[in-house]
Image (cartoon, rainbow, N blue to C red; front, side):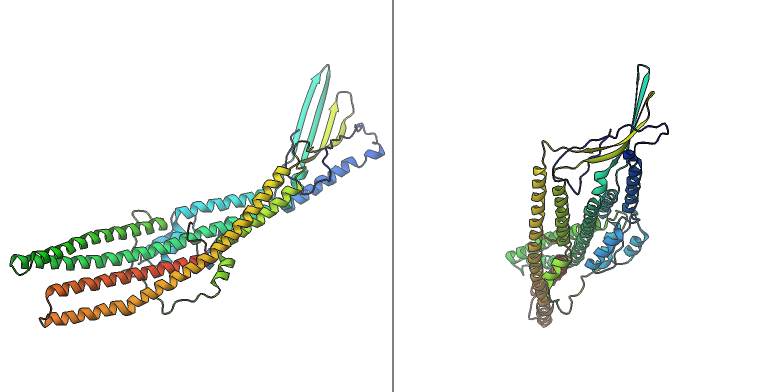
Length: 484
């Protein structure tokens, strides 16, 4: 007869095995002895109670596999409406690509269209299926045997119910529900991570376009200076040393332009990968980065917010809670984790039919469950220490991210308000001197190159600020930005 081995929530104080079968019950219409009248009604009542508890504890699969909950968790952490799409393509993606891309629209496309994110949602479906399965008791087992010989035949029938599985159903269901909620947090963490990566890639791609444009202008100025130096050297009005210097600067500008163009292409392709776009799908990037905000945000209760909102902290806490529940279940079933009960029926040739019941209990002679409990306790302590480590990292990463945010904001604003205007003023003065024949054309070209270089550095500082802003928001609401 098949035995189903599932854990118990309550255990007898002393391990033992009980295996009993009721004696024969006449099946010829005669009244059974008084002591056996309650056998069949008791089994009927037990089966009825089992069925009622089974129907009450059954959970069903949701229509969205928890994606609506994941969308709500994600939306509050990326600062914009979130929509997930299970289909390979969406008309909304084409609409978003029909106009110049923004940081918000890039995030929206990534959440709608990223194949990697859709693949991760399959894990959420697995967790939901485990949760629903944990709320259901195993089907009863039926056994039938027939033995014939010597002119006689004997038939045994039995129905076994998984009592242990029924008793542990609430605990197992609660554990799997916690794991299902943890899977939702993990799916939301992946979505938030994708949004942060997409924003960084977007700012890198736009800055790459700007840098490539200014690198082309620097190359043009260097080429004009090199050609002029070559003509003046041929005319005898310029030294070979000065001509070589101009040509060397031109060659450096050509090299820098090639490097900048590759960086622009690489950043654009990284953005395309995160968006999940195909080769035939084109995206249009703006010509320049967004302007700096008027004022930087202040760090008010950012560490406390991170400890209450960061998804990796919430996931670690859920893991500790689930491990604690599993530890309690393991301790409760350390000695005995098998309990089967069922109805038995036997009939033989020329003999009255026999009815009864059978109960089996595990006898822990060799394994008292000590190693199993020790393993569960070690896993629990591991989850506790891991949660503490995540909390320490969260606070530190928020402080580090805010320092980078303020530093890059101050530097970008300094270039915008001080360095670039000063370089423009110098360029205007040099141009006036050139018009008054007080400065040479090479001084004018050299000043033009310096101005372009300062503008290009200003672009880089502005890009670094928006990346630092994304990193700070992710450190507060999402999760870890580092891998150390």
